[in-house]
Length: 60
Image (cartoon, rainbow, N blue to C red; front, side):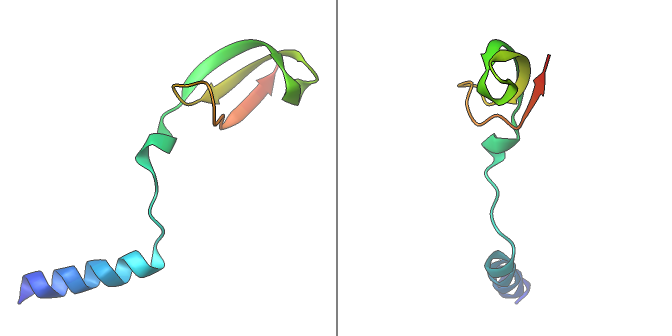
């Protein structure tokens, strides 16, 4: 009975809470010679392993 309630509760929770991709949490700090966000000046960015999907950019 407990397993059924647990499964039903997880199903209800899944309807209201969006799923999050865990790979999005990985952040690699990279230094770039030019960033378009900084008018092509040097910057530091926190990006995924492919150097894309940058979370934040700090202009230098």
